[in-house]
Amino acid sequence: MTFILFSVIICAAFRTEDSEGFNFARREILLRKIGHEFLLQSGDSTSRVLPVKKISENEYQIKFENDFSFQPDSLVNITRHLLVQDPFASYFIVNVLNCGNSNVAYGYVISKNEKDDIVACIGRRQPKACYMINIKFKPTEIIIADSKYLLGSLSILAFISFIFVKSFKSRKEIPDNQNSGIYSLGSVLFDANSRKLTINGNVIDLTATETRVLVIFASSPNKTVERNRLQKEIWEDDGVIVGRSLDMFISKLRKKLESDPNINIVVVRSKGYKLEIN
Image 1 (cartoon, rainbow, N blue to C red):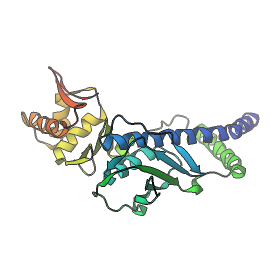
Image 2 (image 1 turned 90 degrees about the vertical axis):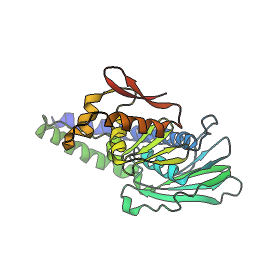
Image 3 (image 1 turned 120 degrees about the vertical axis):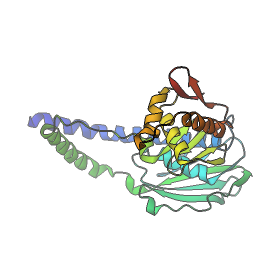
Image 4 (image 1 turned 180 degrees about the vertical axis):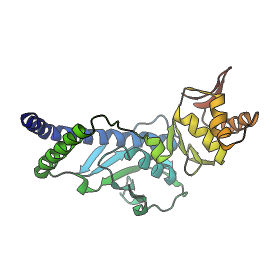
């Protein structure tokens, strides 16, 4: 048993560096996706996001092919939603710079501990111009090579001991969308916590019931949701049974989503409804 544990520790130590390289490569893809979602929210679905540039050990730059205008709310929501998937991004600074003189047009700070966030000037749309986005991550999130092997070895030993003691205990996973309450539906950004839709830079308010209905659809895009399930989860669980109210709220949601032709709530005959995203 000791030999097996020792072998596992040695193998894990050699693989740690490869794992970190993978995580940083994944980070660059997330940054490129931020650029893509950002252009969509700005109403641009055709121009290119240029290759992400690493400008220092912990700072990256996203450039774009064409000029654009943007709503700060959309950029804050997009970066917060996507970078939560980066295991090293517990604290980061975002600056939107003018291409010509590198002056900061807009900036903010996001932390996993929301009370440390610094976000200002929400709702002030920025004029059309050439912009680039610099994202700087807190450097202490990077593990020093000399200490990571020791810490990794101790973690592996603790983990193996835990497996033997708790071998039959199942692990539970919580979806990211349920944690953040933010759903990306094609070019539409749906924030269930603030009950808002952002479509092409325009913010649309939702009622509490419309939000509850859309959360169910957003959790199962392009899948049929049975009518009985909607009625039960939205109203019957609160002790109220309704008939035509569901159709009314579906109709209201369709109207609020109609400015994006690529998303629609369709009727599935004799079954229920489906949120179709092209």
